Image (cartoon, rainbow, N blue to C red; front, side, top):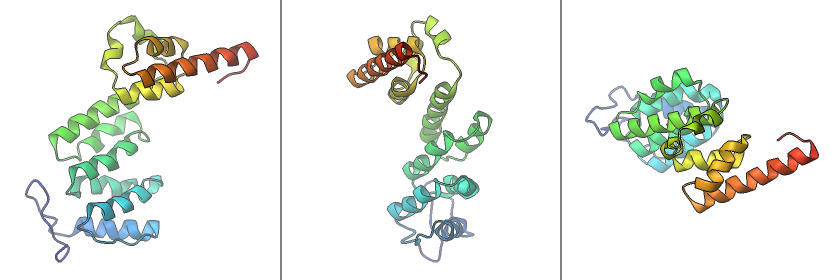
Length: 184
């Protein structure tokens, strides 16, 4: 970065060098070197290390706004969304400066909310509801849902062979555990 200043995609400039300051702080916290601040791979390495500690979220919130690469900004945001309370997700998504990225993050946040909801079985009454579920959500549900009705539906109508296989295997494991009197 030339003098800590660079142009971001929407024409704004990091005039006060805030991204560079955040990178320096993340480097101190993670023990990793900053590397080349112009290099998205070097920045991502720092962000990825910082994602492991919730105390870094304040800095990562800033990163999402100043990060010049929309794919890197989105890659920072998505794992954070899974760890935030549902009520805070919209504020984080608003930090993305690219409409497409915001739309993607909103869909992802909706999927995370469904994944974390108490029960999905009542939603299955709508025969089309599963069609609105992303492949990511279907995979996660097929691998971890404790709800036999959800697993049955995914085993029968999951979007991919992989999803159907995961759901069928999980349902069989739940059935075996029930026979043995275990909880899963």
